Length: 231
Image 1 (cartoon, rainbow, N blue to C red):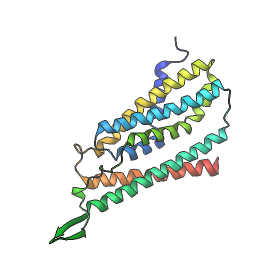
Image 2 (cartoon, rainbow, N blue to C red; image 1 turned 135 degrees about the horizontal axis):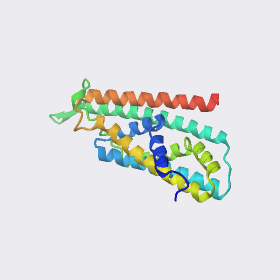
Image 3 (cartoon, rainbow, N blue to C red; image 1 turned 180 degrees about the vertical axis):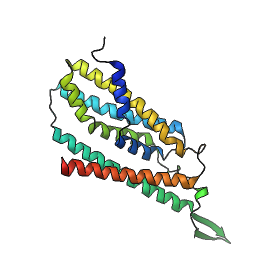
Image 4 (tube, one colour; image 1 turned 30 degrees about the horizontal axis):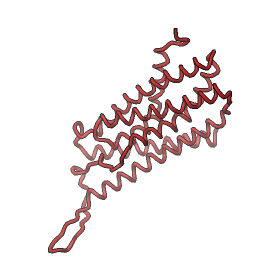
């Protein structure tokens, strides 16, 4: 018999995946995909990265009897802020390069190559063709960072409440499985507006990318300020 409610633990992990910083990071990743299946893969790897970190921290604290000061978790939270700013900024620059490439026409007349830069052709824009390979590995790295930060204080709380190391690690594992399920749902939801089969209005896709990128940058700056200057 489990020493804690199984469904409640899974639910806690599931809802944890829907925290604002998690959603903003993943939305900037899946906006580079053109299918829900690929977005689900990104969500899965985010969850695996997140779970890997909380289990690693948990094992260090439980098996090696190491106490991690709360101050370090604030520094790690600030690292999440830096990561969010980086993700949003990179997405904006990537979108700019795609727009420039889509609106540059190169052709040859009588053996002479000409390049024309035209007005933005939003209808022809393929905002999902970013050229990024193995984006799921980026998702895994983002999950690792999130697990180091926001979940750190959760690990501390669990370690104080559990009667044995086995119970603590089991809780973290089940919590991690719940967060994986939650991120799969979140990734699928955020992928819908960027699916070619669902949305053909490229101008709207571009607007959504810009909005999610700016929100990611803004929220990242707020996390950075909160954890570096006000705690």
